[in-house]
Image (cartoon, rainbow, N blue to C red; front, side, top):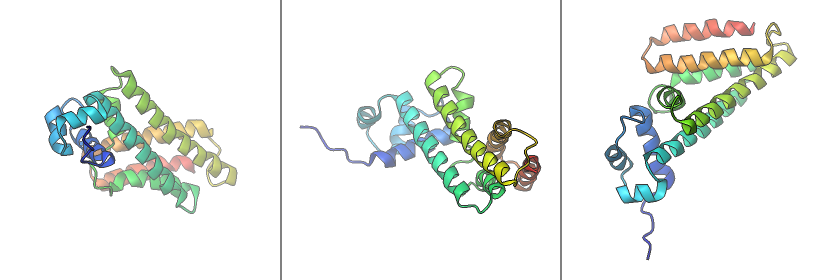
Length: 191
């Protein structure tokens, strides 16, 4: 007779995600995962497969979570410019209690060049963020709030690149006032 799982899958996946986020894929050992997730090694393998499969599930979870938070953040703002600024400020705030930086950026840097599955998750996530920005820019251009000097897809690509760069800068512990100044200058492109 099979034993029932003595843990919530979402809870332990969240723990694994945070551990990978903090330490990276390569530096996170199976023992780190077993200890950090609070489950037996056999349960981990039975539920998630190997370390790589677990990592992919953690990165997928992270990507969905970030996309939802970004969309909610943008929709809560009264203007398009404020919506775009709020996405940048969300990165600066880091009010989630999670590690600094971005697990997706970490995955891009650590694994994308030699892991096609990881690269696919990264590209999907980046494309999702860029599409949200493009939708916001197009809406702002239609309402006259954002300049039409640049086409919406090009402007969205620029903003996304700046947002990814900001995620890297946050992880390196840069001075918050310096990062706020960078955001202010970056967003002048909307005028």
